[in-house]
Image (cartoon, rainbow, N blue to C red; front, side, top):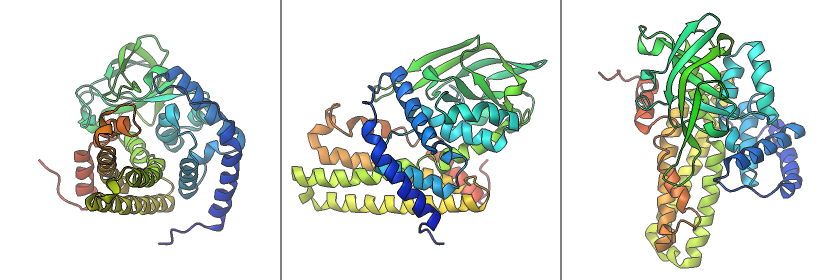
Length: 377
């Protein structure tokens, strides 16, 4: 498989680099990580700049390979990441683009692209995290609305979101995977309560969401009633397939910074540390090539990532944790100083083998859908 740039990709890369070089110096200072209203405004402002420059639609309208070039170049240039726009741009938006009606696409996609709305993800529940199909949030049909009652947890950016991609159970008597429906929930609806959650790293980008007889129009349903599990697999294929591209580039850049720091503080003299850095460099180079392969496969199959994303997610989660463990080794006693670079990132990295599907879930997907092994009992 040829993974080199095509002439179209080379032209796009050069044009994007030129725009980034002229635009990034004009950005305002980033707000504090704990200032989520400020973070929302900053992230939406950046998205608007991308929109005005003609780059906002790259997540949906461009080919998967051009999308990867965009994420690679913006990360290399130190451009802002999607931040509070994460769910809208990389999860809900692509799902609506793939599964929504023409009216739904016209209603929800332009505001996301213009930097006018933030989405959050209402999938996990207190007793339905990795076992997502056991969710219990109920949606009862009442004419042209669903009446929703239940709760969600680890809801990304819920405290600043306008909309939520919400999974609900619409048929409690159906088999677990067949009674689920995908809804777009307005976060300002009556009966919605948001309670922020503080993580181990001290941040609060997640929240609990409580739903008390919330009325959601049937027109907000993406896909058919009780077909939400299939729609959810579309969402998760994007989450595990291409959403981490920029982070792989960031990890490769961080390896270079770690090597420079180790040379400066004398830890480079440890041959075991040098071998570990070299192995991680090879690991992330391989992950980058795997990402290119997954994206090429997605392009060949109509633009949607496949189960190869689970292979990537499984290995990337552990490689990222190993990277930050190595950073702690380089820092030595300073690894206990929360004001030092990489220390809070190391705490955050602990969640990667859980977020977006646990490593155990990814192994099951790989075993059953790629290796063809029988289902466990």
